Image 1: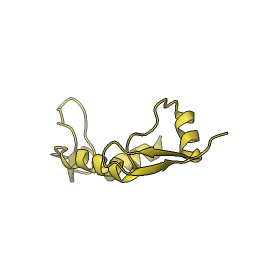
Image 2: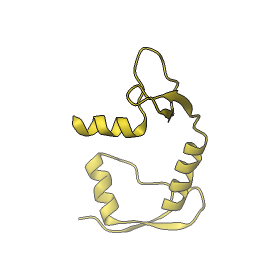
Image 3: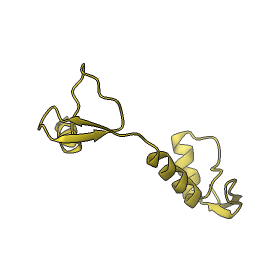
Image 4: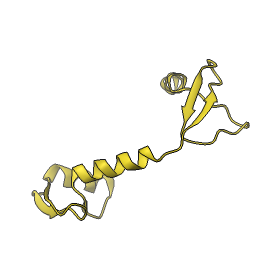
Length: 92
């Protein structure tokens, strides 16, 4: 049903292939627009966003270790380190 398409990256101007599998994935997720950037430019953009993210240091409410989180912790909700958060998530 889907065929590979050649698109041009709006960031670097290079041609890239929007594969049939990627098109199917986009359709399953309900995405209506084709990608405008090649994979390398999309990855670089994601990394730039992560690099600018401010991290906050707090204490894990479960184990007491130091934890770094991408949001300003408030006193009304507990904050967990990544290990405790993952363990709690697995229990659900």
